[in-house]
Length: 354
Image (cartoon, rainbow, N blue to C red; front, side):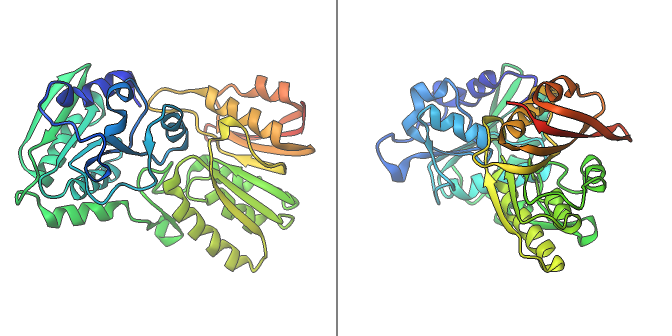
């Protein structure tokens, strides 16, 4: 999440419940259970597991909640007496989340949010106050937790509607693509992905996967540039990417007039792939929160190598400073850099090793 430990953020979030400032929802009554938007697994589950229905669209975090025994739901309940949320850093995405929380809490409900101080806590509290009126708050572990009074006529219904629409899929890059706030490079074509697209071989295929597909840019470029593709699977950990990715891919297929079998898989790539492929392309993530984590990219490489056929190929793009070469050399017989430009490198790895 941030330089602040997740357990500390969650401890701060539940402070109003622990100290009795906010009433805990009834555990046994589904209609009166609370909602936890962008929920994360943690020590809170020991005490409040049955009090909340948890919503989480990022697959690794959703899997952690499920393993912890949380009540995980695909969509938020239509109403709840208490709504917790962990706002993201992206402002439009966060405002849409606040609007959703206020809608779910409805008349008489309470919204509680928490952010690290260095990740927008002040602006987040100001935004929720604009929607719902004066807030109460407290500080703990370099975080700010803030909560509404029971929602009433002070709620700005027009602003709730306006901000709720900020999560909608929208055109970007002059209308060339569809995306939504909070996805990777959501408002532009990522320069590293564009460099990889330039080096896609026409004969790539026939069974291809895109790991970390985002809003579908690389998958669409595969459709456009690679005549040998017959099946194309898009792997993405963020479920919110599905709608724009599928829309972009549908447009690319229509433009190409080709019959390619495609699928969007909501999946944590670091845990391996369920299918085998002749070729895999990827612009893998290299951080969660602010700090670089090359281990994510290395896990993508490991999963790709295990899922490729014996003569398969991995095409990977990465920031030049990320040290993936040792992992690639261990898992592939042939590794070469196709191009280095603008701080990025495109690597081709062939013949995976067991």
